[in-house]
Length: 613
Image (cartoon, rainbow, N blue to C red; front, side, top):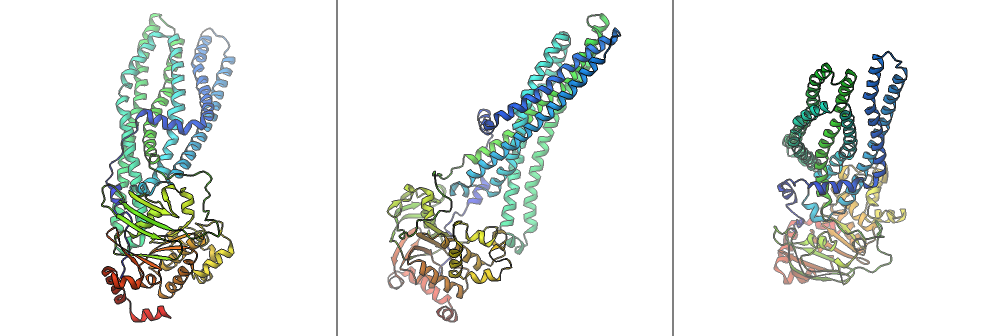
């Protein structure tokens, strides 16, 4: 019996598991990437920063107003106007900061949205080798969890750092004007305690990156489990999968705890520095008041400024922490954006098919060599064959012979290492990619069906197809009866990966989807392997009909399909062994004869009789 082809990449998952964590980006590149994200939102960020700065400036004046208030109380003057002014400053500052915070948060959400759109657009155009080397769950995590962390660095690391620094400088200037000696005491204490934070910040970044990598591992494990949910249950593997996911969750928890520990240490250092400064200033300032070097109003104002320093210093520390957290996310996003993508030609129309009427495409392989990765053995060793336009060509051979890889090279999912793949006499590398694929209808081995309705799946490759075209294809693929039985007809949801359909129904949906495209070249990779005899016979007729106006290439599993082919390409160990008709190859090629004999032995007489009927 012809074996199911397994030419597709075999170790992508293992390779992804073996890849070491990527190092963090250099600071300069991190800021360059960040600036690329915030550049379209500069005006909104500037407005939010200005409003926040106005609120902080209003706070800066309050200690001076309090000083004047104490001085007036000392000479028994009216304080009504000062109280009104102080109240107005408090209200104005609060309003400005509230509006500024809203503007910044809104802008941060806009940055995240734009980053997600950009990342999704890039990921959907990744080359297949890049996808093979990656974990789907980890890529999804970069779109979801990592882009969310971009929000923190957008607002806190930029605006909070700017406003915090500005208000810190302003407070220090006022403190210097009030009491230079006490300022010296304050700065000495803060620098002494704050210098320890230089050791803390890199640890926050490292812990956050490990946590985000673990979150990606959780997504990967869940995607793996739900992608084969029945297999997991049938194998009794729920507890093992649960343990694997829990291990990743615990690693994310450990990374989060480490980051929280160092962030807490950084923030507590701020409070400690201010508290120790307060005690030092209180002692030194009290002595200066007692000696007459300063007055009590000045000491009160200075102490108010000292407590005021908590806010700008906290902002700077939070900004530094947010930068460490955000830079880890930016590094992971940048890694995804550095993956190789396919070219996007201007003016290409999604789902556009070949112009009708159009002649069938011709295919030729000239000395094609190919391997999926440099560390893997070659799949093709100088493959040569020519398929003229029209008719059906079947590819047969043992598993691993390189049959399915032929289709991947024609579609340019992969690039040949040597030789040429020609469509209509033109190297596929010289075709505009969208135009090349618009000529092709492709049915994969596992006939994937996407979550959504039956109609959405059928029209996925040809969204502009008419109802009449859809009805004709449904009849040709014997799906019209299925549509009548479904409770909502074409609008019936098919479930995750088509879970509500049988294997044969999924294959017929995939074939109908390809036929609706009205391609010049139809690629069928084991397209009838899960069909019963009745439906397989009907689809054989459908494929034979399509072969009259389209070039059909089929990786064959059943002898009944092979015998219909105009030519048969026998492949073995990555080479073309023989080309001919069924009768010619049975007589001339021992491998084909053996495969055909095995198929005859595996097919019961009743089955052949049923197929003949």
